[in-house]
Length: 254
Image (tube, rainbow, N blue to C red; front, side):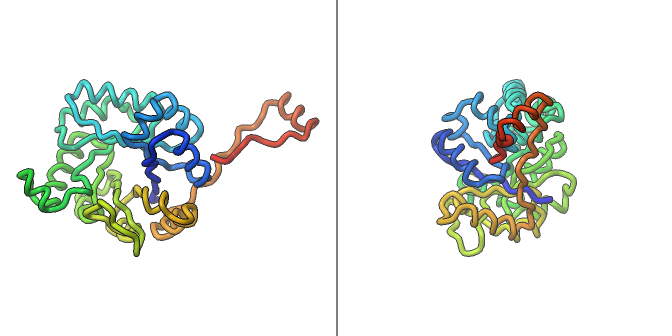
C-alpha cells in the first residue's frame, strides 16, 4: 500500500496545525528542520499523540553515538519514520537502527533530489544513479528499514532491495512546476517504478484547492485516503452523562 506524506514546510506550528485541520482526515505528515525547530519537540510529540503519522525528516548525519541518541529522542516523540544520511556510513546507520528498537523506521537518504549531474560532478561524485546505488547498498547492509531516493533511481533500488521501504520526495503531479527539484516525477510514475512512500509539499500547500490537490495525488498514486481515527469508547459514567445532556462525541477532525 502506497503512503503519501504531506510535507509541512511552514514556518510555525500554528500554520502546521491549520494545515492538519484543513487536510483532515489525512494524517500522514512530514516535519522537517524548519518546523521542528519552530515547534519544538514537545509540540511535535503532541501531534503524534493526537494520531498524526509523523515522518520526522531531520536527516541525521553525525558520529554513531550522537545519531543513536537523536533516534532515541525521535522514538520518544512518537515518530513513525526518521531520516539519516546514508553517507554517514554503516556504523552510524547500524547505531540508528539499534536505537530505534523496532519502534520506528530508519530510512536512509541517498542522493538529494535537488542535486543534478553538474552539482554531483562539482563534488567529485559519480552520476546520481551510481552514487544512489552505492549509498543504498551501504544502508541496507547496515540494517536500514528504507531508502529515500528520487523517482529516477527508485526502479533500480526496488529491483535490488524489494523488501525495504522506498521513499520518493520531489513528487509533482502532471502539469505542475518542478520548483527546485532537479529529478521530480509524477505520483503514478513513482509508484510504477517501485515507490512505497511519496512525499509532496508545494503542489498541495500552494494549490488553489489543497484538499482537491491532495485527493488528485492520492488517486494518481493509487493510495487510499486516510479515515478519521475511531474515537475510544467513553466510560459508563461518561456515556450516561452524554446521553442525559445530549453531548456530542469526541472531535474526530484528525
